[in-house]
Length: 406
Image 1 (cartoon, rainbow, N blue to C red):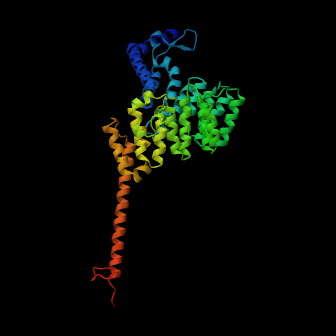
Image 2 (cartoon, rainbow, N blue to C red):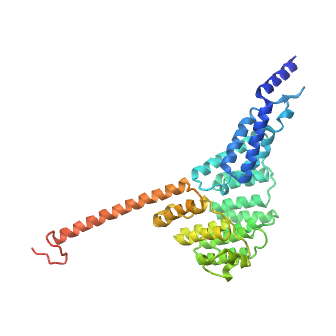
Image 3 (cartoon, rainbow, N blue to C red):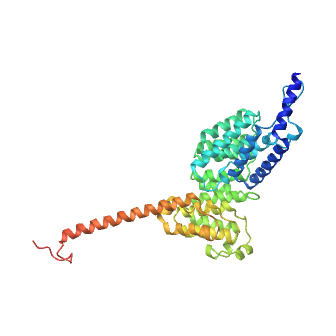
């Protein structure tokens, strides 16, 4: 009798939930989520994932006779309940700064909170973190050294299989927060674990040596890089040169990697035809140009930074994103080179079809107000100085050089 009531109750609930409608809704959400995950759109992917998590609670379960363990009915096989365990790792994979453009510290905090909620959901579901999950979490919490250390401690103590990619993410986190001593220890641990360094590892070593001032060691690692993934090493070497103020060497290395150094040393003369004729070593990517743009902007060379934007679009067919212009229009450059930065802001929409994000608009607005305030102070200072001089020389004389009579 009890069993009959349970079954009847379950069937009543299933009927009330309308399983066909439930499944079709979930299939639509799952399809949209997969699309946004492929597009690496963090915000949209999280929105859809959140919806599926909510719907997971509404999935009716059919009880097994003589057992307390529930099973999913056949008509619910394509619902959030069965697919969510496979999606946790994927959503962690897009909760990373590299997939966000024009972000603020508040956005990073929100992203970290989202990652925490995913891990909490996995824990409640009895799911264990994999090496891939550890990689995603280390990338998400890169700037939070406490969280990174906790994640790494969990991974090492729980016996998670850690590959070279996991060590790379942890090494990157230590370099990011400038814990260089610990970073060198991680390099030693990679060797002790018997892992073979890959292109990412070598790029991180270049960055580590460059940031600790050992350019000779950075060059030795860079010279030993070849084959696939070499663009990562070039990007890190360009970053190290820019960091150490070697802007001319940075430009020469860029021309060398693209093979156009044999044709021209002037960026304004760099064309698509010249690149096609050149024997290039490595094809640059968007990050290559972001490194070049960042350092030229920080050294107040807005014209050259803008020239690199032209080269990346016209010569290499790499479309800029909002982050590209955020590297040019910073609070510092906007005050010092307000007119040039304002022109770049206009160029975003008119030439590249990118609507300036709120961050850039606010940066330009604040810089404009600051400049107006400075100009007003200068005017008042000049007016005060002229009034003092006129009092010294007497108001009756138009010639300040005339002798003052008692």
